[in-house]
Image (cartoon, rainbow, N blue to C red; front, side, top):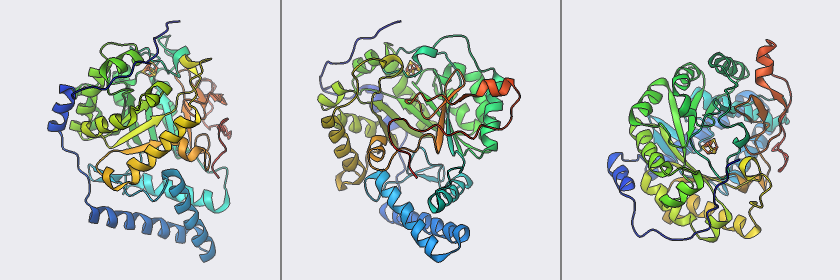
Length: 407
Ligand code: SF4
């Protein structure tokens, strides 16, 4: 098994890369003003209350459930999140929530209201990650698919269409296509998104490989709404070292530009190692993300799975505290309104539990179904079900083994 040197070097760049400067000039970011934001949040909350009245009927239940929803939201975001991004006529405040207004957003809210009102454990999944390929040109330090990479494909093209159909029948509202590197299987990814996007909001998670302007335009035209590009450092050499590929940074930055130019919601994903946090790289990283013009930054804690298996990568208390402080600052402080929204799952996981397993699952490139990419909790194999011509999904929840389940 190939090993990659760990990033322990700490230095601060003296200037932005030319690529970053080009992107700023290439595609302006539309951010709703204060009035538009306030009105939009009022409309969203009013609609949630309206659905609560229609579905729950009894005034006491309506009020109690609406309050529960607001409280859950505040726990997830560390306060009353005001940030909104408007792309292609829809508002986004989270990369895991469909844009508003949309049928998918309404269905998500209706399901959550029912769940919160009666703790209905059989409420359906709303979201899946689907790893469509084992191919990948990267060799990332933290890869959770490490043991599956670059082997013979498990999913045929037909299997992938069948998987999408099976989960759509179960009411899934959002699919994030991953891998391996999904853009390494572009000729199958494109028709798959064209098919899936008729009923479901589609996103692509990529390292930036093969994410050219032309391919970004084709994805958008096929119905892809959002893209998450992994950039694990704002310093080119350190990102390339982390990804085990000398062209990783240039490809990722160009992918961000291409996604924005095509008009897709664009997010960065960063695995924050101890060295990254000890080197105080989070603030400059957020400034880098702001300059790239992305709407979201997803901060992931390293876990001892896949390529990190057996390594002491778990963050310490001091690192968690740094992340929580930054999470509140970038999402709520007055001086940071023009920064991307920061997603940090560890914040709500340590307070109210984890959404994975009950609301979402991760289907790896071998067809095994887990709670999430980081918690390998295989409960069934979707390819086995397809071969046996089973059309209904097992009623079996993948509980998060690390954090409690959110009610
Ligand atoms: S983390 Fe993603 S991009 Fe990196 S090696 Fe694994 S599958 Fe490839």
